[in-house]
Image (cartoon, rainbow, N blue to C red; front, side, top):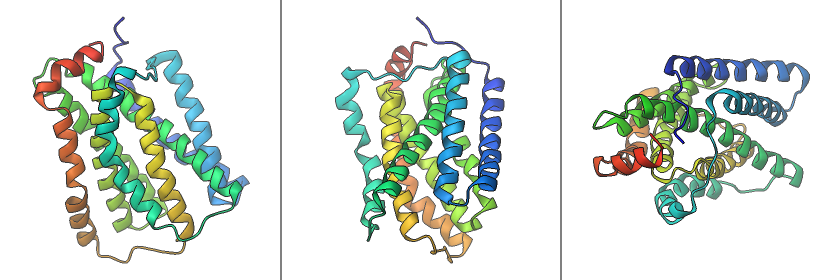
Length: 254
């Protein structure tokens, strides 16, 4: 059975609405709670429930695990482990059990929300729109990753410009990598797991270094991001190379 062909305009409106709602939720919850991680936890939980309900009622994107692509998925996922390992190596002390569990669950909430929204809904919708183009998968992957990176500009409200731009670059490159894995494995759950693994290390590292701030000039941060994250972009391009176009479209039921 072919998947539902979503209206791209509606998809983009829904994504913008979801990100604005998330920002509003964080503000609202912060009026009730003072702990940063509690604010993040409850706002991400609510937005995930909202997106899941809308997806179930309208977009109808299923989170599936195709076991025949497990070996391929594990192989393609190896590069995604690098930032996770790097984050975990920065951890010099462990949080309490309760906080540690909260951070792990939070990473799963964030990973589920963002992967469902940007890979499951947006990337799939763009793939349908451009399925007749020779480089349709690459175009869909690049545009969805650009959106994924751009929405992180919302973090300018609480962090510096250099740190935010570096995060935008990382999100774009990570979107290319995870999106490429998703199109090759047709397994959104794998992308959620990888995303959560990376975020859990980042959350633990941020918790430990909560007073640290980036003092590097913006131009140097941009240059560093391009150099450091370029391999992920290139891997995403390689994962959806023209020779894989037919299998990507066939397995995506397009």
